[in-house]
Image 1: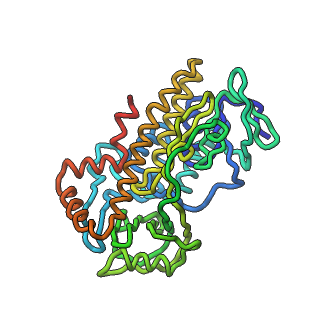
Image 2: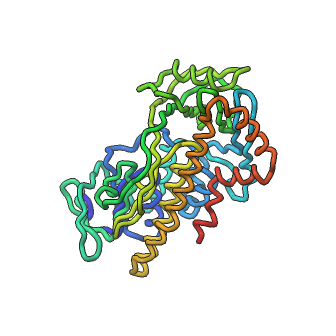
Image 3: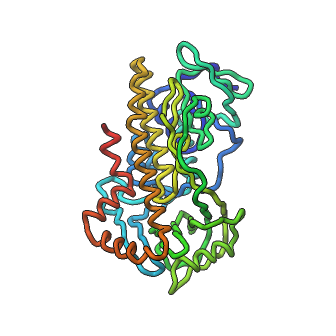
Length: 385
């Protein structure tokens, strides 16, 4: 059974919802966390946690246990088959976490769940939010056949957010323009196992990222992805876009899927006591691995703002959450869309693109700017304001 009341009801137990709940619980806030699925997903999905996100997770005590379970990648490369067009050196970043952490989303979720469990908070599942009725001091939430009073409701329930729909918040943007294959495989490869790579090919981009236990994540833009990409499909992508002199060979497909990219941002992140974070507030291209990272940053910012509001009794401070986080989302959307356009440039423009990339990689100030942008550290000052 659910409790009859709570300070904050968080809907959705992905990385964003878990991080929101953990931030609140560490501040002593009474939080209830729901998810409509009967068990946590075991597939990897998002697979990189950037340096700035690790700094944010460190504020709530979640970085160290996560780092222990991932692959630290000190650099990221952009390649044309065997040629390195640009190397992005994370190891020189001004941070305690000078790397990109390559780790399955299921591991990230498990690490956050364990931290929450240590504070006495469990994910209540399967539970479905079906309605919200405003009250004088918050809302009355209908969860399946039970009712729960809450001061605030956080929608961390993904792109098709029920909280966003109930709040009547618009979600403008473009839908389904790009098709992608996503897979976790085992491969025989000479590529470094501590370095992610973006291969730029005539037919489109391919991301190659090593995960723990010898697993490699592949992400590729394709005209029309197969419903269930198999070993032959993934091998063909590597042959076409990956290393040429010593080609990779796929030996096992652990998991594969397809998806279409959406580019959308919520009109606002707040409607009274209803608030949005993560994919409920913004979705975009996977280029640059920014989505889950931005969602976690939303979560800690929102959890901190809610804890402050509950401590001082005034909700006006929540307006600053939208004011800070929504421009960050718009910036990430532009950045991810720009990377996608760069990777999918028509053949006639690719030689010029490759020359410009090599020049940018050879100019230290430009290379540093790109590194800070990919790592998320360029948002450090904005989030502190």
